[in-house]
Image (tube, rainbow, N blue to C red; front, side, top):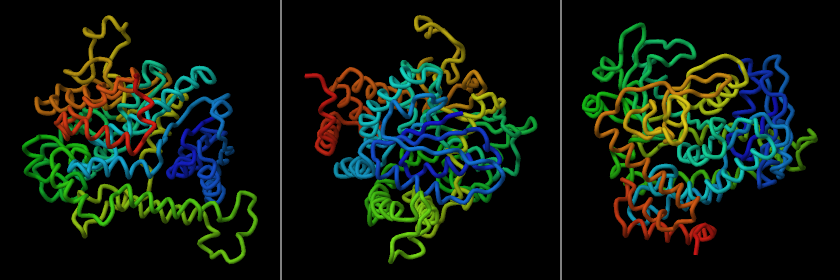
Length: 478
């Protein structure tokens, strides 16, 4: 199998390659093609892959790098897409424009997520269209954020061959099961109840051997304190909800606290990552080159070990994830620092669609449970009752050679369904703004987001993002 990674110069690409060299996924992919618009980043990540220690007997996939999209797609069986238009500097602006208006500054949630989507949807649509021309049978497994919104924008082009992934929902299920002292059947989620949108979901059922262990877990303060989501939301809120939210709902349930904590930090999350990568990538490129020759005279040992440099940066970056939600002396769970998150989800999907057997995973897929013509979508069964059949939702799915099929979920509670509907409408306004060149729809998307809620702020936000990203103005029809 030939795998193309769009955003091949991305910081997390080595996690994918490391997993491909493991016993679990060894032999799944023969060729990896790294595609990126930035050749310097491609060079740096290629050096890391060359320096990566490979364990086990699996033959590592061959790696090539290119800045030509058509060359990257020719002969490709699957595409992983993890692009960030505007780079880490863009993330800084996504956060800062909102914060300067007194709003939450986070890259996927609220105003920052809408800005990110306005920049990401156009190149992702270009990628999907190019796939139709060069590799029409290939699967697109989408990492690009905001993952649910991007996936929904691509479904009209790629149909069932686009699957959106995120690791936060699956991590919540693992954390809760471990805290409850139970083990889920390998590769099965039929006892798991989870519904929502990407970065906006709730674990509402956890049945193991015929017993729902979630109520007992929520009632146990000591057990809740043993995992991040339990500590984050606390027993009082979780008992009121009767479920455990995805960690990103912290930004909705504790908006003022989150915003205040972000403002109090010496630098924003985006600024921290931007500074780290601005320092790291030149050092990676200057480390032992792909030819294996010695580093330049005067280089230290760290400079000669690209993989070690990258891995140290990865650990530091993981430790700072959602730092605004934790107390000053509280560290992330150790298992969350070793990797094995989103790359494991993506490769599990790839393995299943390649014919490696069925597996259940929480994914971003259209809400419809059965194939249907567009004219009948109002009457077909859906995975999440109350949301449109063609809306992309985040739910447990069974993945096989035929794709990812959503599993039916319970009807969401009133407050949860209201929030999902509200955010889904914002997502659709954002997609419409890009596809139709409708600036008014973009203003409306910002204004109607529950973390904004003001027409005046909506106008100010879009104006601020247009100033930060002048190319946005090219989207709008005269």
